[in-house]
Length: 528
Image 1: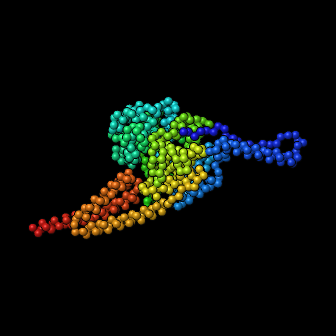
Image 2 (image 1 turned 135 degrees about the horizontal axis):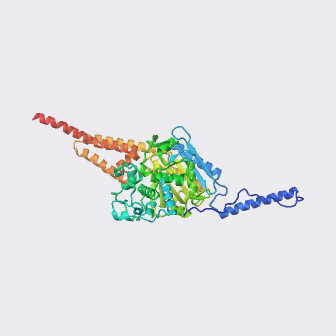
Image 3 (image 1 turned 60 degrees about the vertical axis):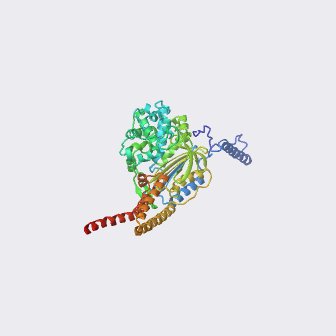
């Protein structure tokens, strides 16, 4: 569903002046007329509130905004997050955009500080598809092969059935894991330098499900949409998003090129390891730009969210049809659930938007973009016709709920406060890491003790059992978290280091036994 546009906005500053002959100028009549005017104005405001109970009559409440700011700053300081930017907008034209903390270079975060927004980019790519559909250049129910005759996956029959709508709704059958490997320059996707090259590299990729059968989030869906757009419109994706979205919305602190964005003052990013922030400069393969390549400021995200609230118009000019906005925000995929940054969500996927509850909001449209060094959220609240974006210049890849919970608690808290409910509470990032660090130290101590005992044992069986049991344990952990060795090293190097040390301790008795055995063989030969 789209966010309806209120065509009957009332004038909040209207006043009623007493009328009558000049001779009725006594103080009593003027007072009575003034009181009547105030009564009529209050009555009109009450009636307007009854007619539109979800929309604030006079924009955003300053006291509420102070509570939201205090909550964000409190969470930021408690978790040692260097910088955050927040933008809140409503249907009445009010906005609240501000920064918290600093950018890692000593400069304060402000409304125009650029941040990477990761997978929020998917909504922009979906909007480009819908604009092309409005112009008759694309049919979202057409198969991908109509525009990309060379497109293939491993299943030739399925290749012919995958449609643009299935890509938009994340129901094509492409897997999340393959999309992650593309992000990490892994496997067949290594070195892909363009959207088309990455799309062509899917020819031997098996599908996880039959097309249209079920939801599975994959970056590759929006890579393919980017390739379709480039073919149908005859321009690179970066030029299309600049010409058709960023420039019309006057998103002057947004960029499609991270290198240019850094020169323009993009915040430094920080990966948390063992509880301490380390500056990091993540690299995104150019071919993944349509799925996660945009950089934007909080002020610019406010402009984009207002486009959604106003059903596709900007300054009275239509950028995309109201029907297209409605389709983007409509639930389309089968129901699904997932834990994202330590919080559980149930949802259906629209087109570049998740649809479902968000904190105290029973109905919301939202999306997340993140890597281990940043987090970006955008949330639409249809009931109150409000929206907000929250951009964070630090994160962690540690796959533990307590460690990542603050990154979801921040937007959930803003949503709750906008709905008149208290924000959630939970451990700060340093508190979560203290538990992790203590557990890691204890585990390594146990592995070291086990290795010492196995090395001293007379029977060599223990030297074999300890590393074997450790490998089985690590395989179960990988299956439970969905993180293979390559992804784990890239996303959570602190956890990867702990596991590597544990495996090293486990294998030490076997290594020592092998060295002792190798040392005995030359001695026996010399005796002969």
